[in-house]
Length: 419
Image (cartoon, rainbow, N blue to C red; front, side):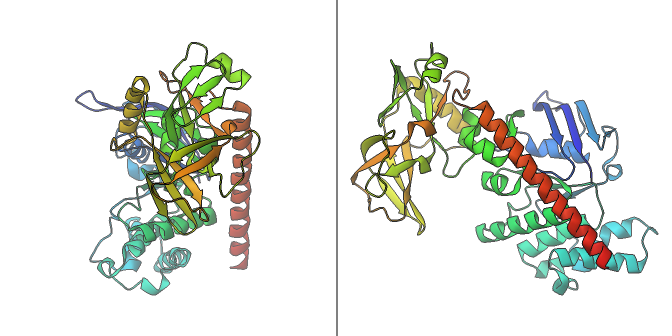
């Protein structure tokens, strides 16, 4: 296993286009790091620079403390799993997994090859498919074969480049679980690229959010969700995404299209000179007052529901609103950055499954103003980010990661002793 250090990494192409702009990142030994962002943000380029498939224009890359900028991919001892599996169609599953071992001519006996392949197949539940050809496998099975080929290499780290994007929704869910289980069991440093923020939230110990080649925030999924540093991170993380509402400062009140919310004393100082902030509210923080009674601190409002979607365990209501033209340009810019479609402005409400609200109803809702985020219109900075709370979440997440890694090492030692 290895730790990976990136210091001011830059990638500039021959035409002058700068794909990665000074990214610095410390990936700990045994950590599962996610690189996430919309299309064209530089995440795959960054991964390819780590593995050596792209030259580094500027900056320094170290693996286990050793500079590797000039090393060829084969000399970095990293295993990469590609989006398209990169399997050899004429070879069996066994031989596809064994291929890296065969390349190391003379280093492994046939018994050692069989032992390593069978061990990898056991981890990935491929024992019954070792004699089959890739064409006869499902997409999920092919991806597991590609992962098996990475496992047998005894690499210092695994690198995944959008490995699940070719799979349907059900298989993606199953393979997320498989990848998480494998990484925890092996305890190996892993860097994983995806544009799917659900994969990022469910898999990563920490997530690095990229926008146009620049690093926006590196944190645990929980910190990204609860304490985003800016408008972009807040909008990218979460499904359904955070609601963004234009606001106007009026004394000690923020006037929103749906209701007015009070401004706490410490926020009033930050809002001086910022008369047009943007307020972000997660869909689950808006409640149906007919199902759940509001608290004394909650703000209530009525709104006409345009559309509802019932999903069994939950449902969503969509409430259109008129946006302030003075703020709409910023929301349109954010929507483009997030690969949005520029659709109508609407509030998304995550309702309890018991809610009886339907299309066309004028419903009564409530929300806790303390759960709202307030962003600067010009810079996108989150003015309500709580640094102490963010630090506490970071400490707890790191403690959880270390405990998981210790359990993995103890299990590996116990299995080695038993054999």
